[in-house]
Image (cartoon, rainbow, N blue to C red):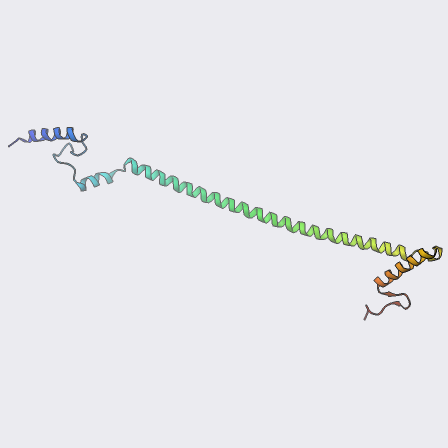
Length: 159
C-alpha cells in the first residue's frame, strides 16, 4: 500500500492537470467538496452575480418609485391645467353673454331712436308720395308696439 504522503501528492498532481487549483479539493482534506458543503460555503457570502442582481433590483425599485412620483406630478399638473381651462371657458362664456346682451340693448336703442324719428316727422311739410311712405312707416311702428291709432293702446296685452 501507498503511504498517505504519496496519495496526497498523487491527488495534487491530478488536481493540477484537470481542474484549477483549490476548486475541487480543499487544502485540508483529500476529497472534493460535497454538495451540502458547497451550498453552505455559497450561502455564506453573496457572489458577484448575486450582488449585481441585488443592485439591479434596487435600481429598478428606485426607478419605479421615481416614475410613480413623476406620473403623479404630471397627473396633478394636468388636473390644474384642466381646472384653469374650465375657469377660462366660464369667464369667456360669461363675457360673451354680457357682450351679446350689450349688443342687443344697443340695437334696441337704435331701433327706438329710428322709430321716434319716424313718429316725430312733420307730415304736413312733406309732399304726397313721401307723406304716404311716412304714414305707412308710422302705421307699422304703431302696430309693432300694439297701439291702435283709432282707439289708443289696444287691450290685448293688458288684463
